[in-house]
Image (cartoon, rainbow, N blue to C red; front, side, top):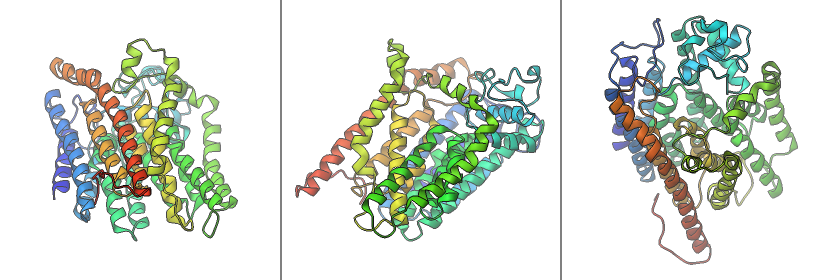
Length: 495
């Protein structure tokens, strides 16, 4: 099958870059046994070419996988390949950025009793600490921007890894693989009564090679938050207290993952208004809130009130491959960023709400509650990713979990086109960040990759935003025609 072949190419090309060792895509980890690399030091041109092949093949795998699922295909072979690929990502170094070195540094600072929200890695221990000093530019002098739960987890992996950068990173990678596997197992169990929906969810989440490489293969904190957001949606209908605990992991890692919490609030409110058997009561909401506060309160007391100082500073950053970059470069003041982002998010919400947010005609059972919450979470994530001024490829994990669990309506129209749109967008955005590090590139590779990021990336972002608006308008028009007995030419996305 084409999806399996394309996914295999994507994973093998990515793993080849990882196992080859330090390069313009793989920062050195120092001595140690795991993760394993061969120390070949490949050229920036070679690793860039392999990563381009990986990203494009990953996009093809998602697109062909969605088409195959629409024809009745079940991705059992793809799941086995994804399981093997996920396991292998924990045995080779992370690829595509040096974020994992920052995680290790912040964990080291916290584990040794200092404050990673105040002390930057290059200032800790006089810049001589064996772990904190491994952080790469431009983050050497930047305190932690991650939530207190993430910092606590980083501290635990630092305690396990000691003064070895490689061992600390490997412990973090193992944790991410476990989180990914737990979310995948939960999806498989929760959707066992609907094989078609389960197949779609696995193609979008569990076996999505774009997420397995760019996210898990890069050992990004978004994997932990994204897996937790999936867990929240799966646990909430029947185990609200446990869902609250897992929501605390997601939000306490990165604030935007509170989108799933917003989705649950909307679903609870809608179910209460509808009434009838199966609607969750106030006790359900209170148990969820208690679970979240049980973890978030002590985590924030431990981190201190200044834990989000760097987050507030980062809110004014504008990355290159976003819709805002050309505007800021043209002189638009940064004070416009927040209201402009909210305005664009509101526009997308108005268009996509009836298409993504599922409200059952009958009683609100657990599946209906999950689907409604997932739809709202996906809607919030879509608006944020398309409109935010700072966006990197691995941030897309915010969207794919809720989207995989949402049942878009009208079935086979808006949902199918949206899935394809965001898959294509992620692939094109990921290309803008190949090979990944700010140094180590030859002049020719630097010219190509930074040229694409600066000159093409913003227009990819604009094209994705405008396409989302256009598809939303067309899908709403199609739905209106169906309700009123008209039969306009359908958007062919899924049979």
